[in-house]
Image 1 (tube, one colour):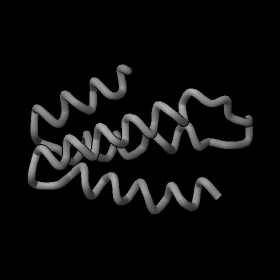
Image 2 (cartoon, one colour):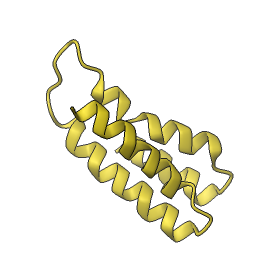
Image 3 (tube, one colour):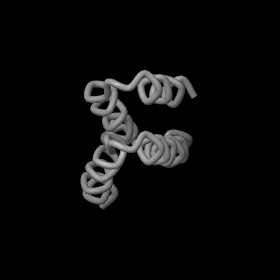
Length: 80
């Protein structure tokens, strides 16, 4: 169930995190970070890969962004 929900939400986070207004993009990335932290704190069953999937939008955003501010924020989120 969570994987299906995440497949939709991750696209939204990627879209919002790629927004032309840097403040909106930063807000979306920070929200993604907060959500990701909640899921990464939980134990995961061996046959599931949701914890890996939660990080994929950060990879897409890093590849697509040319803004040094956005890229720095993404790095900070991953470091956390």
